[in-house]
Image 1 (spheres, rainbow, N blue to C red):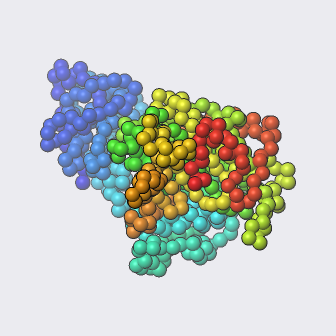
Image 2 (tube, helix red, strand yellow):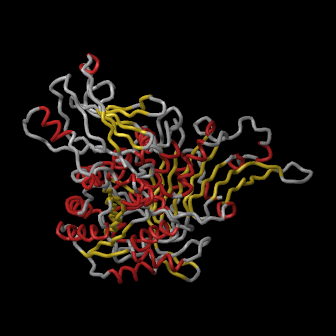
Image 3 (cartoon, rainbow, N blue to C red):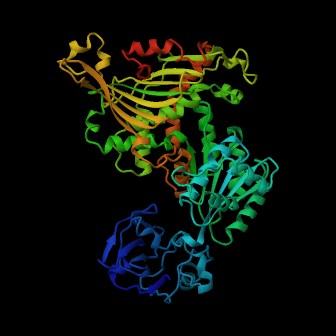
Length: 633
């Protein structure tokens, strides 16, 4: 129950000269909680006129002038505070006006009022008193979580991504108890399908945690009962209005929050966003939209996409997802660096010789040739996945773990980087190869790929960060399809020990003595540090050994899928692992020039056999900077 306590404005000179503001007071200590400017004018806190109190925190409201202060309140206090929305403020005509309100009243957002007498304006507009039965919609229902609901709509529900990743991730969150008590999941696509058919399709991809098998079948049934389907066109406001009507039926009068996941091709993003925003967004709660990569093909198309999205959404409503940022080992990067004293002092050019970001898949583009040929490996992997990991790796210590502080530091790294040069890039394309009696098709053998395609399926690049910490350190990237193994890892190679007493034990091959920190993102997640160690015995023989943290051996809990973490963050409004628009602009500015040059000059990619380690040119690129790829050992 929120009670509005009545006080009266004094006619003293202090009260008469006061400006208006909104501030918060701690009633236990009788001290003002710090507030921040909400309007455009700087104004000061003044004597109490009207107070709204809820539990131990009270809102002190002053009405005069068109400026307000919005309080800065801690997370613990936030659930207990009513959210009072003031859409219109009126300057009191006289400092001697006595103002007061009846106990139990609630400040309501007033509508614009006509030119009436000052006292009538005050009564009818700004401080209108509403009967108790009308007060239930005044405040944010997030303060009462049993009265709020989240509706999750998967747009493109019949596609592979939705079936293989999104629905299983949502079920895992439900199984672990991370979804809100009241939630509904809707699939939306052009395919004609019933609720039952959707549930049958989804049920085939759901699995329970290995370490938590109790009541698995029962949990699946409960989850599937919350799943529904609505068929419609992606560019039809009428179809989205029908979806809105069905969502409201399931929201059943609760405070509605809505999340849309766009699991659709980028050429129909804008149509879907326009229709969802105009016809199916939440009228009272939040509306958020998750957008899948690719975010354009270059600077121009990415900027155009962002502009179009912002016609219908604010930046804080757009969640650009890069699922690699949700990987356990990628999220552990900042923990490893900033919470371990042994690493942070070494994290610079003084001790690090080079850093390698390696991504490899042991299969080709089977089934995705048409899509992949439009983008290529640089746009598909390097410009987003690997570059985002690089920014997290190289950033300075953020002010806090707040999303904006972390993303600010990432943007600084990207803006400090040199645009990629063609001389620092090697591209390749896999060809047909027979191995073990099995013939593997080449890239251009795919019927959906043009026979004369020059789209690279492999790329290696050397990038540089021109700042005080990383000046001169090569950051090498390598990504490819149809290679000898499937892996994703970060390799940090440290400098040689100056004046090493044991150089003679290594001979001329000093790289064997290099300390190396390896963060294996997938598969078999692990962190290990390569050190030099004496082999037991009477002689002096050295050996490179690993101090190994293998996650499967150390932790019994199954590692969550990246989509689980990112979906949960989107529901909770946590943006730390999502890409901001200026990050995107900075990332594209690094790769756009070289991508255009590759296409304009029609650079022919170097062929490499299916299942090999990639083109020879990648080794020459590394050798130019006196680096040996760490995954060759």
